[in-house]
Image (cartoon, rainbow, N blue to C red; front, side):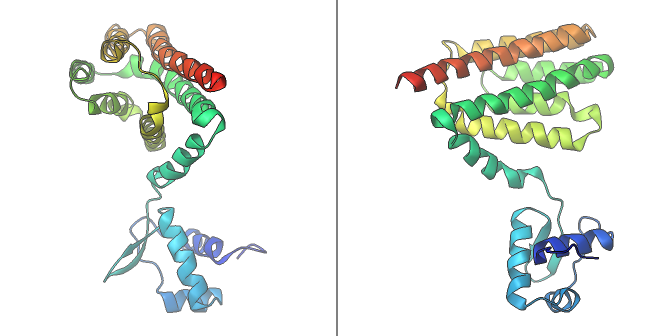
Length: 226
């Protein structure tokens, strides 16, 4: 039953839930939605376009409309815009973003230290070695780190935060030797995992983010002085 004041967009989402349609399932056709919702063609089309932008539905031209997977990737442009337009040219919002990511990763790394396999440690070690010449290795490291946690939402959140940070990280002044510092920070994390030491792993992760936050503090000072 539709909520009072619900938009056509809301009612389509409710219909998906009421019918328990899984991702990939075909949606009712446009005429069917018009009949089911008592809405005009234009209202249905506008609602479908809005839901497509959110990843809630997927339009496959020539085949129809299907229930989407609502990946958090759809939120990346909005989050990037919010950070870019924040106070101080986005530096304050960037600090908030990094703080949320730090809380998430330091909270998870302890459990990873107790369960990570030797094969995964070796793969993480190889990614750290690759960071000196491959910019994508950093993102791959954090994705692999939590791949075995069984929480797809965590992986999507970390991926989204990483993408937004690196999209706008140019507002920060790089450290004198950014590559060496990045490698050293990640190497400490791997060493703690290899030792199966949850507290050392958390401390290594805090140190990693501490370096990032220090660069943000410096950027805030420059913005305030400008």
